[in-house]
Image: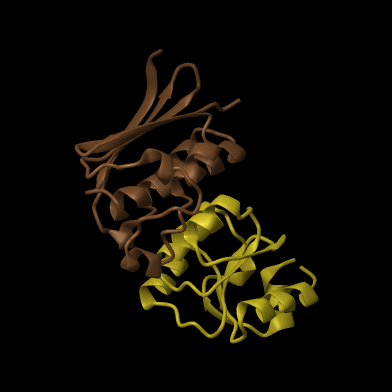
Length: 141
Length: 110
């Protein structure tokens, strides 16, 4: 598979004011090349939740958007730590380690990772103290 | 229902955006936990919340809500209203609690 579109973004730790910027750009980029709305909405949910996780739980991170010539949309979210000690717990709806500050702003519902998994066609997560990587793919048809 | 018609029926104040340019309202969603709203809201719904932080705008736009109603007289941060205006999101203000605000939407015909 070769890549027909690739974009990279940086998420800054604790940048609550900038939260959602990457997701908005990803959504408008994909909309401009004709990706159908139902797929766009799924990607927007996954991207927003991942972006939020990076700024409230991790030390920021990088997001890569890629579309292959097979039409599948791939997204990779990688951060430099501190890692998720128990992925199984983190995947449980309602379970959260968000700070009081994050909760005051409406984050910390414990629905981030479950939402991401639910809307993706493929979901893979690896985590260690050195960082967490989430790889997602979305079929357009 | 058009948002301009909704405003006529409820008398809610417009805090930001252009109601005439808002997508028609096709239902209602109430919630303050952003991930919950992100995961369960549907395009075209009127979103009632007491969250007044900037991030509400990002969720409303990504979720393609028709407009936002800030309930219970909560006061939005100025940055939130600036962002909403920039993004073209209509923000309305209701002095009533979420439950009564939702009832008003129901009675208005949504």
